[in-house]
Amino acid sequence: MAGGQTGIYQVSYVVRPGDTLNNRRIKLYAQLPNGRRDSLLTGTAVRVLDPNVPQLARTRGPLAYLNYGLGEDRLGGAKLGYLDSLVLLHVTGRVGGQYRVRLAENQTAWVPLEVARLLPPGGLVPQALTGSWSVSGDAQYDYVRVSLPERLPYRSQLLSEPARLVIDVFGATSNTNWITQRAGLQEIENVYYEQPQPDVFRIIIDLKHAQSWGYAVGYQGNTLTIRVRRPPARLQLKGLTVAVDAGHGGDNHGAVGATGAKEKDLTLAIAQRLRQALEQQGATVLMTRDADVSLDNGARVLRLRQAMPHLLVSVHINSAGSPAAKGTATFYRYVGFRPLSQAIYQELLKTGLAPWGNVGAFNFALNGPTEFPNVLVETAFVSNPDDERRLIDPAFQQEVAERIAAGLERFLKETRARGPRGWWRKQPALAR
Image (cartoon, rainbow, N blue to C red; front, side, top):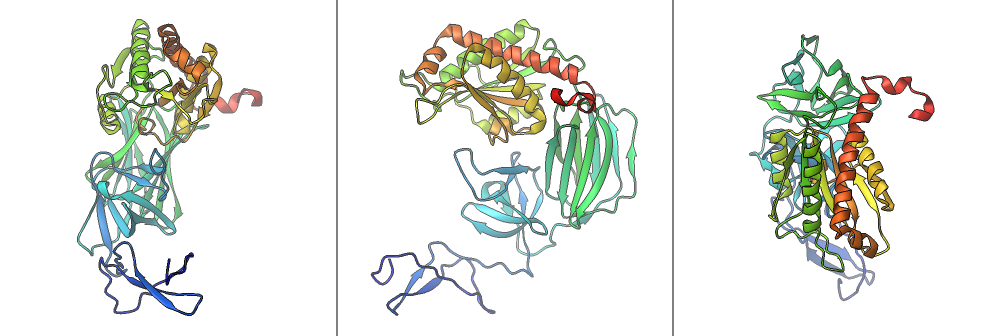
């Protein structure tokens, strides 16, 4: 309301030379339809950045990340990707709890305040020339190492058909005159680069196998290091380490059904049965929780990154506002890990649960790691009376666990059939 008249008013403030807007509220004036003028102060303080004095920041903490935009839902903003610590960012604005950062010409992202530390104003905008780089392997991984004078931001993508890693380094321009590939490589087929725009350096890594088993991107000093995981020596459950995550726990009850059944209890019951089924097949099982305890998702991710299982299954129970919603679903974030979610989904349908779907680009913490294939299983809807009745039945919990284990076996079998890189090109069109 302005001047006693209700309505929607658009006001603007023109920044003039000499203005000193440094974290203070601005008085704005509105011209009303009756010819009167009214004023109001902005709800928050405003600071205008001087383009001649760049504002820089560095990422902090082990789970720093960038968002595409300011959109939010219960899973948070859509993530562009995770970053290592101490990555240098060029801050160009702030809205609420996020800084806007410039990645490249016409490319911006947003970083939450809690994972970025502002530096004193001034300094050099993040940019660098790449030097020559190397590709090598050790007993466990293949590596790509690119030396840079500064920790620049990056984005990685895991693609399929063919299996390929694509890493964009923002602020970097090629001065690479050779790439040395040393002996011992087992998973990297080819490495090369492109310069899609002057300040975006693109690293492309072709993988030897159709199925990726994970990768990590980070810095060793100022050397960007891409660690590519090799497939297990034997594609069978015996000898593999499988992480099983029982969703929620402790004071986080998750969804609750009409009978009072809590998601945290149902997920733990299924996860424990899944552990038993996998151990009977000779797998080593890592449980993120084995009791009714509170455990933050960030802590789960950090523990899993340290343990480095071959596969991760996160068990959850679905819920919806309408009791009509029912069925089973699996979720993945990266298309390169989709085959795992598809295999488990096909096995879960054998329980007779309705098909809810195979959902991609899912912005959930336990789907975030790139280091190992992972899947979120939403077994059934506790908000649906029929699904809830089945979920609280121990016999059905056992059946779900056995179907998930069968899905893991199916994934391994299909991975063996897919074989090395290029398999998909040789198949008839209907087989794709």
